[in-house]
Length: 507
Ligand code: BG6
Image (cartoon, rainbow, N blue to C red; front, side, top):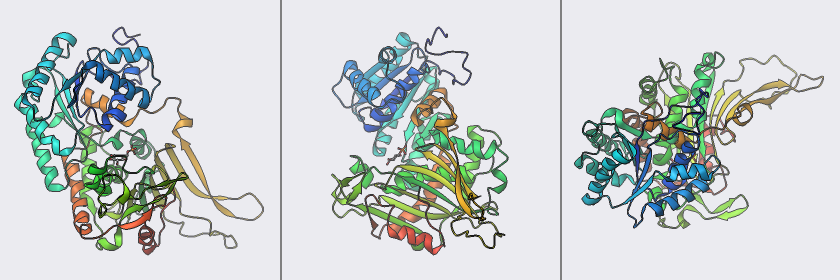
């Protein structure tokens, strides 16, 4: 056993490195993200022996709390949401390094106190000047916090003898121009290698597996192009609604909330060329090329759909319509569903439509990438009923039931040459004994290790806004279509595909 980390078995080579001693300062630590994702992820890292000795979690928020109050809240969050089993001995170890500082973002004194606390932590915990600042706060508050970090010199690693990093949560801006402003502000305060933009989809194991599937095998890459691929469908469906985030969601909408980031990143990983290595710069170059090569449909009206859910039924329960959700104005035109057909203007993908769709209050939570192949050019089964035979499909299931499915035609048992569609399944849960880390667990560890491979850079973010801005502009003066909660989106979305002679996959 490792004396510094008794929970860690050094013989296990698959375990990642343990970061240097450091402090993780979380702004907005009382929010939903911190409670449901960040604190549980820190507990899980602790449970896997991946927190360094001398690690400190420092919560900062406008609450009249002491360290003990925060510890209690953090404990409840870890008990309720951690991935790994909750163990008292692990919690004691994590709890020992929890601190809280009260303050508002415009309060100079509070930030001076934070600065002093980080200095003191060098003596008490040996953090060696290393600190990461996590902005788990609304985007409007980014500038004031960044300015405080600059004013106090806390962002400047050269003054502090260790590294200083910042983690920015999406959405990175509201459109291209605000994202450029935000990017230049962040870049003026932190060095280029110290900015970590979180798109938590990149931390999902199955999303990374897409690269393994494509580039570690010979089987798929030869057919991964317009000669064989008919179309690609990327779906991110949620059965949940806006979950108490009315103010944020109503001013954001589905396209800015997830299409601009999660779905375009999935598209980029699906369509990109092989990177020269699996490091952050090589990946960034290839993803950026694809994001720049995305083309919008000529007829935006015919090739996009926005929707808003009406009341309906989900899992046997009646659910409100979007306009009846608490905090949503009765005349809101914000979309809770968006579907769009995009092109990728490269030789590999010429003419292949990429259909992206996302929505809240759809029948179930599922995210998948379906590569749909062209039909066989000739079927030599003259007397055979092939109507049941669809296109071959390779489906990467990002969540739930993480895995990959290949759908193809097979002879049904019997004397007739009857061809039916069958599935070949790879399930993460069945193939591997170890469970996948949560996306935030992986990404937080990477922040502390300084590994930027799974973080989009500002060029990718800006290229993504270039795709979204014209759509938003077009949609601005139009009302969203309606769909019942519990249905797979508005009828217009089915018609959109029908016009292209296709149908949406039913995940
Ligand atoms: C977030 C969006 O980025 O992703 C939410 O802001 C959405 O609206 C969430 O619900 C979905 O994440 P996951 O990991 O549950 O698919």
